[in-house]
Length: 256
Image (cartoon, rainbow, N blue to C red; front, side):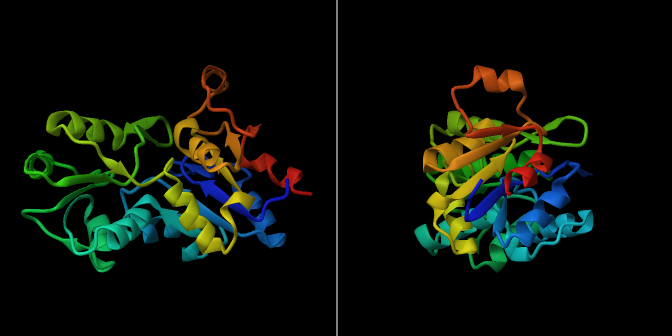
């Protein structure tokens, strides 16, 4: 494998919930030893970027904050550049909302132009209803990512996908979705690394986000079977990765 940069999923790829995937730290160490830049890409927007950076450090990864790109950071950048000045109602956890506000987005509680939907583990009926009413009045729906489930140590939790479909159906709208498989995440990550997107590789455990994004961008992909996708899922899918490995622990041997 000869790539100028690695784009690496997090949940299900280097850890699962709070459990480190064996060999993941050695994988990152091998990239650093060879001077190959990398960015962790996560669709998980239930916390601010600092949370995921701190989690990686606590697990033993030798990383910097700029090595982490979340779907919330990507969505913030999109809103600031493509919807400047718009009034935004954020459905999110307190630290996620604060991250959006601190970045300069015009966060409001009433009469928004945009409903900004994240993976909100603090969601309430009142939040759902406020978003619904705003969308019915014509607000735009922007979502950080499309994932249906989020991996935990033992199984999966419901993620943002079902809420996107609920709002689209109830409000007769179509969400703008920023995270994987939208290639915006890939392009942003390439800029962070200072490399051309076409010379990078995407590593992840999900066919419909990680691998699909890479395929649509025309880059090589590595599917790892340590997370959501099983061999049975792979055989039934028309999304075909460039490489299939049991886990990221198998990548260092292929870099020489």
